[in-house]
Length: 188
Image 1 (spheres, rainbow, N blue to C red):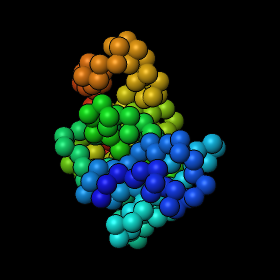
Image 2 (tube, rainbow, N blue to C red):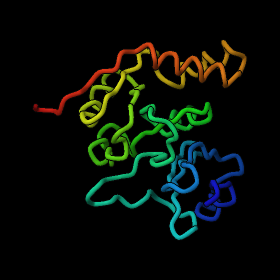
Image 3 (tube, one colour):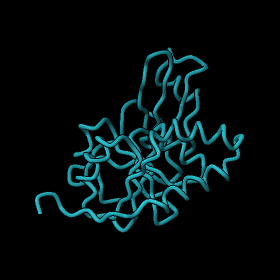
């Protein structure tokens, strides 16, 4: 399945302008969905039977909503961030990143099992990181203290004049400096 284009979006939403932004989509071979924006409108589209349709992928009753980019991770470490936009920005830097569908109240409906056996670096605000940690009790995770990912990436972009290789090295260095924490089960 190819990444969605403006033409795909306009088939579903004819009112979508040519400058609508499609800022996140998973890699080929995983459950694909995209988040699109124009003016103040934000919509989700996903692939069903090789066609892009409005909405979000169907939630598996026994497992929950799939995580963004689930199954496409090439390394043993994944960054967990709060939004698809942040995950997409890290993916463009060559780093594995994911998020769940929806806001903080939707964490409980995500399929966290796709992170089993993978080191997780939680990179989000402290309050949201504590909430996410409740769902990561089976994993070793590292809370990042670099601030919000998009702000950090913007300053790193300016510092390194857009050299994505150097930005990637800085992100990995930050991840190595933080000590991993083992999280026990909630209520244990």
